[in-house]
Image (tube, rainbow, N blue to C red; front, side, top):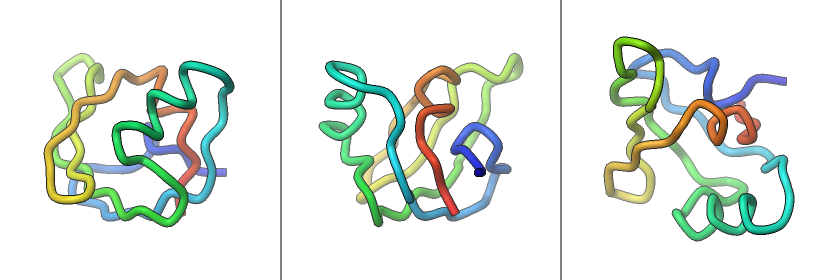
Length: 73
């Protein structure tokens, strides 16, 4: 299982599954990260948090903890 946190800068990955539950999972889905969505890794902050991605045509910053809940291929 590879997570969004493990993806490298410049990679384009596809969301396979969202882990987590309740409000956290709902928030991630509300940001446009749903199954089958393509995500491009744009930047990673110097200490690794946050991660900037492009999803559905807009830039989004995610915390490492949230990125670990997103399984990708």
